[in-house]
Image 1: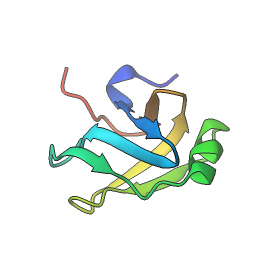
Image 2: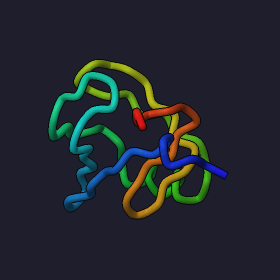
Image 3: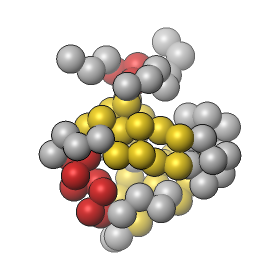
Length: 78
């Protein structure tokens, strides 16, 4: 079971995937290079790598739903 602290929200606008804030450098409104095909694979439970364009840190996405990316690492400070 994935923990909520390992999740990060995203938004999809048309074909573009945004994160409101980078979990690593806190840059706001980051347009990712994540494609719809990769998003669909993540929703099917196939691991995907997302390189944040703002700071070049890597996020391994193990699963996605309509609102969150789920990672194998802690992304939130709770």
